[in-house]
Length: 102
Image 1 (cartoon, rainbow, N blue to C red):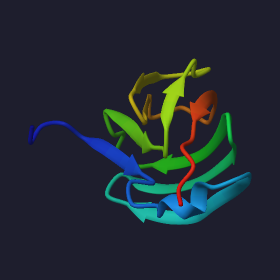
Image 2: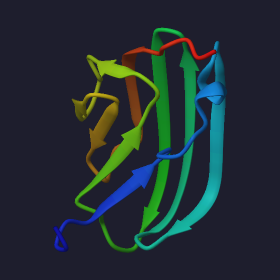
Image 3: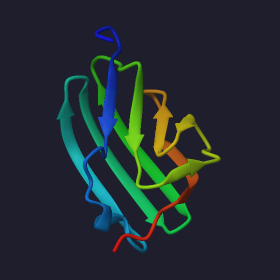
């Protein structure tokens, strides 16, 4: 749909980066909607996402791709391994089933 405006995050993170516990941080990245900083902290069963948007144009939503099925987010909605967030979201916690990759 050419009229849908969405910001996609973490779509191509290698599966091995998600193993165990850790974090991924992206600072001051420019998008077609303006700047954004993102930090995701993860453990085998939980994920925390912190966003610092500085949009000049609001996307319809932010779609965050994660390595496993997402459950019970504190904000937004889920679609399998994706969090669908409002553009003004700054913090989300969710349960996640991260598979073990060989």
